[in-house]
Length: 507
Image 1 (cartoon, rainbow, N blue to C red):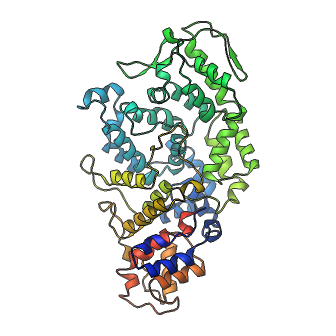
Image 2: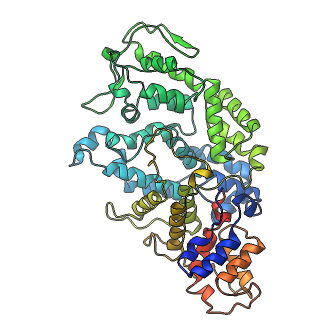
Image 3: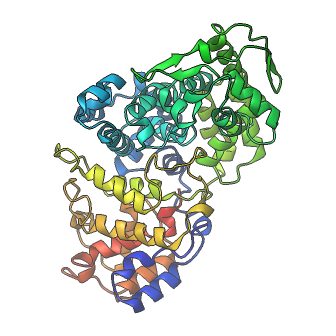
């Protein structure tokens, strides 16, 4: 778990203040923020979105958590998102077909459309009203991994996101798996586009078993070899860049993987054989357990209860691999309700939650390549977690232990200070921080700190609150006067210190 948060902002101040504040704030997120997230509505929003905001909190309280969740699980029909839809017009190239990317960009292999994709991915995570959908898109992006940017997918990665991940994120995993197996991006990244009956490439056949479906321990090396044979012929047309089934490359003859067998008698029938194989894997109990476990780790706990995993796996199989019903069971389960304090934000989640709680809104349409979203993309890279940036097929780790490094933590702290001081993402509009100070002015420093924490939707312990007061050189009970440093030039440091806390880091 992350410990000792609170020193980042103080690094910008004096070393003595840093030592005092960091030492006092040091504690585990689980212990520090149990009271922060005990509100069931806040608990849901901290897990099911990229960060609660006061407006969203009010919306869910008014609608009720179950009604809000049900709408979120049917976003296209129940959650209007007109502002986000309008914003997407900033990236018209995301609608280009593969041949258009090749034809219309002057430099072959240009990464421009991939950067459009990454900017749009960040924008949707930050500003879309369909937050459960966007977190699910991010989950699947990290499951069926296509690294972006990459020269292998320069002309097709945006279509993989649209036609594989976003199209099926809340639908049936069997459909998503079949779509991925016939998408040029996946076929190129995992080398199946070059696989041939005379020289089968085992990369995709292996990762399909190990990472995309049943998982390690449920198959043998012989299964991997047969898996590769079952996928021969699924390829990419070199001229158009589109999926192409190539019967001339197809292995013909009986194939057997785990409990699945097929006579596989003709080259022309190989595409249908692959569908049979993929559907078998998608509906396998081991796949159900693997998907259930990964969803529970993402949304519930780094070590989720076996009872919950079992319920989710049952829901997955009972609903024909559909994901929306699984998520409904997850979020309405007693195990989810009891999981307060058991997840810590990854660096990427921390950045998004910080931008959302600070109330930043989209900038005016920028010059190409000069957007604040591009700046945010680079910043997440310094945290070690740029979206779609994991180069290996296993995806970013989703547990707290993977993200406790000192350099990444300091970068996150500096990012918080840049946000609160309006030194980062400067052309994104945001409320003036002085408007966070209540009027009339709180009478004590303790009351000021509590009011600012409430704006961040966190609750501080008395020990933490008193340490923050000492950071601005006052006792909690000291009288707060107009014009004091804590409500003027030191206000950004004060708020950033709270963003650095384990209370905000815990989701």
